[in-house]
Length: 319
Picture (cartoon, rainbow, N blue to C red):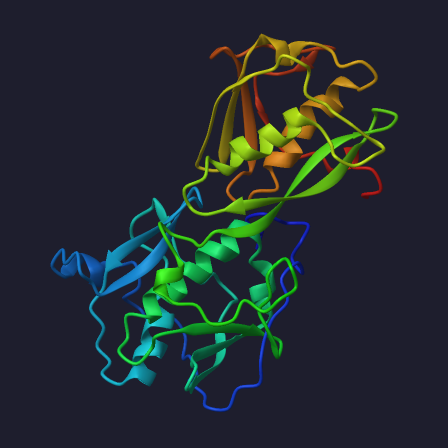
């Protein structure tokens, strides 16, 4: 699975804890989750809910859900199964993807501790924050579940500072996520201007931020902070609009984006944007427009009116 931000950083988040009392998951329910059970229930704004992630991965969305279980142990199992079900609403996605599951659940005086399998490492950046928000907000609806902590591989889940994140509850997540630092990867030119080199940047994500695509392009416009890298975006370039739909990121620049950058090859300029945006799990292809219109060529007669996928051959050191 491609992590939100980032495909290159599946091991960015460390985790875990030793757990004693288990709740084993039995697999995905045939119905439930952000699915038909929510549709059949009354539109109760007070819940209960199962929380899902919107397809753009910018927020979480609550969907009505009526659980059948009675005990808190069974409710934990049922809600986790429901979080693993693909939503009926195509604008939403489940919080727990294929391959990820809870191996153990432990109740203690401090709260509920969840031990995930190693597939949790595939969740990174904003995707991880949103998924964690969905799980915690869903489970904290259960009476007797006030705080939840995450573990992977026997160690506590840690933040970018290396410190354990610890127990969280629904109040720690406002509008879909808590304010946390996440990494984005953007690509600048190398010193020769003929290859791309990755740069890991840390940004704060709180669910109310501007679209992450805009943040990525803004970082490209500002240029690198590390030595031995060159800015690719031509001076005077303005981002007019950026949206993502059905895996395609639509980027509209002003005419200055067509200008040549001294010492940087044209395809490196172009793919600095494409490869950077493709780090998002929601982006598979990129389409460019200039002042709202398509252009046939870019700089050195590079076809510019189609859909672009990332180019790994341009990344220095990558095979």
